[in-house]
Amino acid sequence: GPVTRWLAAMPKAELHLHIDGSLRAPRLLQLAAKHGVSLPYASVEEVEAAYNFSDLQSFLDLYYLGASVLRDAEDFYFLMQDYLEVCRVQNIVHCEIMVEPQTYLPQGVELSVVLEGFDKAIAEAKSGWGQSVGLILSFLRHLPEADALAMLEAADPYREHFCAIGLASAERDFPPANFQTLYREAKKRGYELTAHAGEEGPASFIRDALQLLKVTRIDHGVRAVDDADLLQQLAADRVPLTVCPLSNVRLCVYDSLSEHRIFDLLEQGLCITVNSDDPAYFGGDLLENFAALESELDMSREQAVMLVRNGFEAAFLPSDAKLALD
Ligand code: ADE
Ligand code: ZN
Image 1 (cartoon, helix red, strand yellow):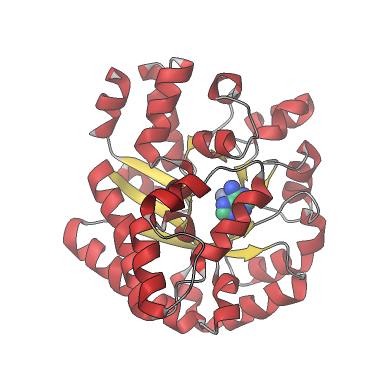
Image 2 (cartoon, rainbow, N blue to C red):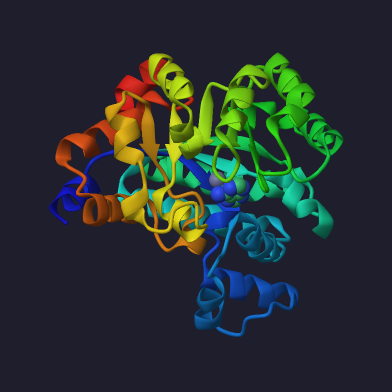
């Protein structure tokens, strides 16, 4: 629609993007063939037909399977290059990308290899068109906290590569309370702190992420709608929520976008941002998420501008850098 066409040319930020979730079917099949990894798909059509999810776990099973084709620095270079090309085309001038090194450990891939590939693609995008990139060291909550702590330590030599830590994967059985030592250790090291909370899990997990983990930003957070006091606190403190509309529908958090409460949250004064989460799996990059808000929820120009501005306000950037980008 017209609002989305207008937004296309506007500089935007994206703050909630899992790099493994940007691995598209053609690249997935290419890398599987390169490394002789057998997948239950023979064509792009079969991959896309399989991406029909009933909940978060049904998605995560295929997400980790897909990421298992990533084996050497060249693979990580191509993966990052593909996403940064989307940033260039969609005018996403600043992005914060979740990297989940624990995902690659079963394949014997170490963090140094992952970062070698990512660094090359990021350096090219920075010098090529001035792309701004932050990396978020994101941990897998279905694994023990001790594993996360070991990865946090393994990342110490690469501390300057990351702006923040995050917490992702299966939410419901793995509450924020399990990761208090991890977040205390990360804070000591000077990382910014974010965590997935209130996607499939309850509003109380958002409270716990704020109180127990001391996060300053919440990934998803849509279940806050169930807790009026929490909504007031989120609005008063301008705690950003990185909302992912197409993801929420594809993972059945909402039956359809028309049931999404994103504009209620925005009107209540929360710092709501729009993001794509795992665009290769959920059928759209950042601009397609805005397009869906326009077509399904009648997003106005004023709402669109607020969402875009919030993306820069919520970024883990020094405030002078934010002004330069906004
Ligand atoms: N990992 C990748 N995408 C995710 C999501 N939407 N929720 C939790 N973990 C994830
Ligand atoms: Zn996510």
